[in-house]
Length: 144
Length: 144
DNA sequence: GTAGGTATGTCAGTTTCCTGACATGCACGA
DNA sequence: TCGTGCATGTCAGGAAACTGACATACCTAC
Image 1 (tube, rainbow over the protein chains, first blue to last red):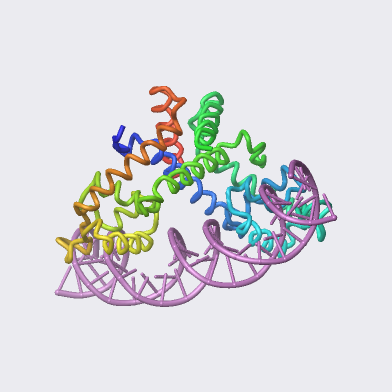
Image 2 (image 1 turned 90 degrees about the vertical axis):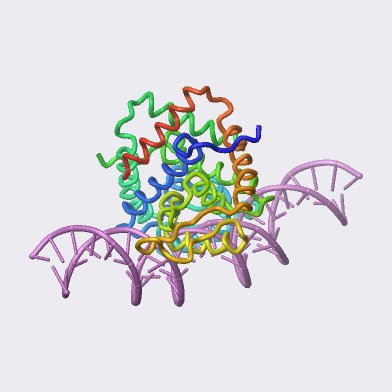
């Protein structure tokens, strides 16, 4: 079992990196007019679907450290796109929510990202698409 | 067509990011004993399969800018893992090749990464695996 | 032959994310 | 009650990637 990775054209890892990079680049390009980075958009999207999340919970959902999320939140709060509770209802966690401006820009951004995803998977049928999502989730699950 | 992304559990983009992140984390952990970053390993792996590539070609294969690849190559060359031609046979491109030490560490690293990939796709049959790779390649293709 | 376009190597500066560290608030058991 | 452990928020420093810029080498068209 000391075999190597083998031809990159048949490596799952390489294909995964290739697809993820292409998606990130396309999202960056699409979101640039809104002056949103992919991380910032991800933060808004998660917050739109799960209002009241703390910075640490957001960080886990967006796959960054809570330190990075902290800086991200400062920027978005400065732009008036979200608001953080001034004091913690319980524990230290500060619930965060989108402002009206945040919801507005999220609608635009989410439409842009949805269009990118549709372009990426235009050749997939609904069943193949669902299977791909499930397979990717299984990959992540197997490594955690 | 101004619909948003929708539930993240059913979003291809989110699943892709999740899987790619899990893979990157697992690779970082596996490669740490060799004191190799994922980018450094990727560089060695590509170079092992396609000797003589230039820095710019390597950069494209590894999905980084040629500036980043330049810094990467300096580090790997300093460690004696690869050697770059002193002058260009034609044009400005400097062919790069692995040294004996580079080939040796690549064998170790490639085995580690292959093990991670196997762990990630342990629940997949050969056909499902090939289909996943093809689907990911199609995703990348559709965005480029 | 010369000008324009493209590809490469390299330097510099900036951004973004990370690791490390510390303080605070809560839960649990001795 | 008190100490231990854990999660969170935050500050500081460093590593890794990026963009912008410039010089060089080739290739094409005029």
